[in-house]
Length: 335
Image 1 (cartoon, one colour):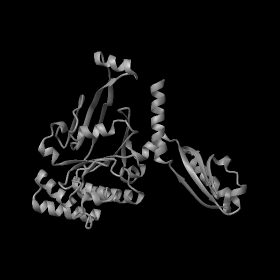
Image 2 (cartoon, rainbow, N blue to C red):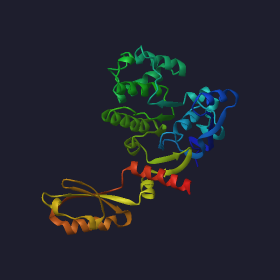
Image 3 (cartoon, rainbow, N blue to C red):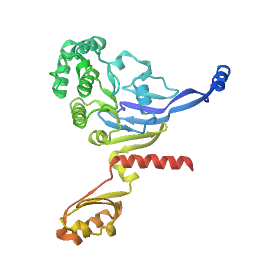
């Protein structure tokens, strides 16, 4: 059995925050006695990731995702627990580790604003001590993959958000890292640019075998890139497994979409086949229990006959699945 690239055991990060009530009196009292409480940003999570995996790291705002990535990249010390990435303890920040990993955050920049990205690449080459031949080879590959030919010689401040995100990817990968932590890499981008960034990440993983841990609120990112997901909430791990199994485990129903021919939609009563959740002209959407969905779909085909133009049976959108995970977790915590 090979050693995992990322191994996390009981990792915890607790912040001590100061609280006080509103008003002048509360402010004056705070000079004498401050009320503090501990907040567990990460509450003892455990997981392991093998070489070459692309894993989605999911959870609502404040779940502990970014805190976890900062610990794994060495920016934060944990309160308790252990972690090893590539055999290194991340928060020791050894040069040999920093040269083999990268942390890319969609709302942060490591490029100098007023100079071309090509000049920043050269600075990073010196920081990471990348040999000239390796630098040229890697930059050439990244330029082709990300279509940077017209961008790298413009000042960063003149680039659009999508263009800047592409050169940010190149900057973060210039040292050919074996591990990439991607924190909301497509945040704020338009749909077209999101698709391009997803395509790049998938191709980069295929070409290099890099291990990738990805956070995103855009579920299209996760569906397109990740076979496995880790879900956390309030700093606790709720699920770790295949993306497909998450839908099957937490959403015990299928979505049947039936498209009816002209004239049939007005008279068809499909409530007998499942719960009607939407009607849009000739298209009717049904929610059906997972176990009986094949039988109900077959009945629709047989009984509607020529009135049925098209039919599909799908899992519910992954956003609904994740919402269900969080809802059940909240109910469980309250009981």
